[in-house]
Amino acid sequence: MSRSKGVYVLRTQHENAGDLLINDLLLRELSKHADMEIDDSGVPPDFQDALTMKHLPRTRMNPKVGSVRGFKFFALASARRSPYEFLFLKPGDQRRNTAKSQRLYMLKAATYLWLAQCGVKIVRLGTSFAKLPVSQQNLERRLAKAFAFMSVRDSLSNTDNNLDLPVLPDIAFLLDDDYLEVKPVEGRYVVLSFRGDLYEEEIAAKLQTTLDEVMQSLTATTDRQVIFVAQVHRDSKWMKVCAERYTALYPGRVSFKEIGLDLKAALSLYRHAELVLSNRLHVALTTLVIGGPALAFVERRHDRKIWGLFEDNNWKDLLIFFDESDATVATVQSFLTDEDKRVATATRVSADVKARRSELQTAIAKLFT
Figure 1 (cartoon, rainbow, N blue to C red):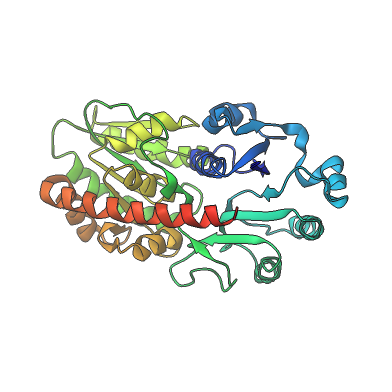
Figure 2 (cartoon, rainbow, N blue to C red):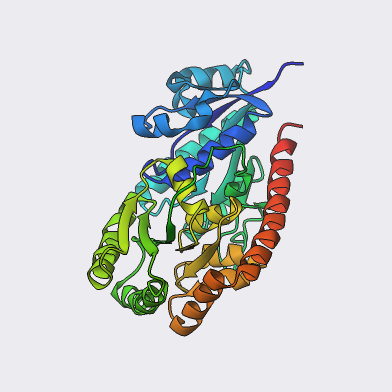
């Protein structure tokens, strides 16, 4: 029996190691069920090089496949002679906040609808619609009736933005021990990693106040290092500012690291930390999925996606907040000093991760039946 064939559109935030991980994991899972051709046209070479799944026997890079923009792809589908049964659109956040981007998407949507009429199954997995204008959310609701669109948890108060879409676990739950070899990292250290693109001055000051107390607590142990990590390039400026501030206060104890697209280095760093504190979903969640200890360090107004996902998984005890300095310091200290608590938490989270991974794998497999 011949295998299905699909085209995977590799367009995302190409400077974001979290998006690299999500695309890599999704390609690995899809290739279990179909031969995947990756439309990498317009994708920077460093992102292409970092994509590990391109080496799988059932995947290959093919910029000439052209996705829906290519005349040959469109013409073959229109004649019902396309060798591709599936078109996989990019996962991740959907924005389209300008009139130009909305008009462009309307054109693409019309193309997708035509391809669907011609027998090509249009699929988009692991997509967040929370940042779309209401008019665009309404458009997605209509398109979903013809396509296989599956969302992820978007916000604390609204699981799927009323789009009537299936809500899947985050794609990061597909991460397992077989993905990449995680190297040991020497020394005792805690990782702090925060988004650098969302917070106005008042919120940054609130975090700084809480961080001052957290840092005082973390450096009370003389041999522990604190590493400020930028997993996304736009986080670098703020993480450097934090590192410089605390280097002056705690000489020799603080450093800065930018991950770039080195997934092996990132996973190794997170897995072997004493603790990871972050409001980046694919720092905190990824750490937990690979068996490391992490707390989601969130700002109540802006970080509702990671807050919601942790609450959905009954991980409320792994949430700390910018505006609760005393409670935050107490929680951090309990995770660093109470070994029984760490082991119990790791055991519970591991069971949750396996359940979410199985749920996600089952949903993906159904696409091909």
